[in-house]
Image (cartoon, rainbow, N blue to C red; front, side, top):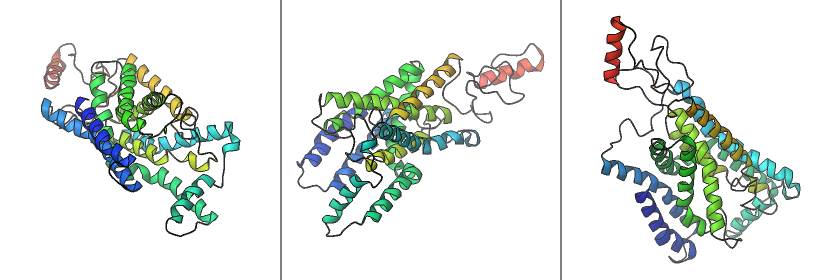
Length: 353
């Protein structure tokens, strides 16, 4: 955390802020977006530096490679499409409660496109606006997880691939989810102060925005943590993060007013993010129930010499492998059977474990 926060905040205050406020001259908007995107690599740099300093190494504990993909593919699929479904559901709830703000012609998007076209002397027809809107939605749902993976991996390897399991070694699942989400939200503080996600000039600026960002990161962090723990890899979380980034403005395209970042239709608002909040509560409850059963929350690989992967709590061990083994011990027979060859076999397995 020290390495990641120091690098990130130093870069944001010395590079991002001057670029966004004109301190570095007339920097094009696209260039500013790239400068901001660099921030997402710092958690991964923090992981590399920390693992080198502590000599942890990278083999076997980086949560990168798929674990038993034939059984965990559904969590990869959940990471890919889940955020898009939840973002659209939250936007639908917002518009259901605020029907006057719903605009199927996407006039807000049309205004943005016309402003961009005016710089080149071009014009935008209404049907072109619809096509652009549909294309952006399709890209967000189907392609954004892959298109954004280069940057989202930088964050997810740090927050879910390293911080999450480290906290779980010392805390229960609910404190871990809360603490990791708040840390993630505070890490965004300089960008939030610069107007990212919540703008500037609102009541309570910038502390209300920082607090809201922490809450948003707790909720979305539960989703990212769930798919990471269930799959044994942080890559589904990286896809989910990419999907969320790709769909964050989906609802705003249909808003007459452009919405309110604290309310909706963007998922950063209480209504726009309602589906994410509900999903986060359900996932937290499922993880807590699994923890109460005494199981290892993180799907792990079997030690050298074994086949397959560790079984998570609530999952049956493979046939013929230690009927008395607990799920926490990965389905391996750590206690010997009574007498005979079984006892020698169990001792051998226990030594290997």
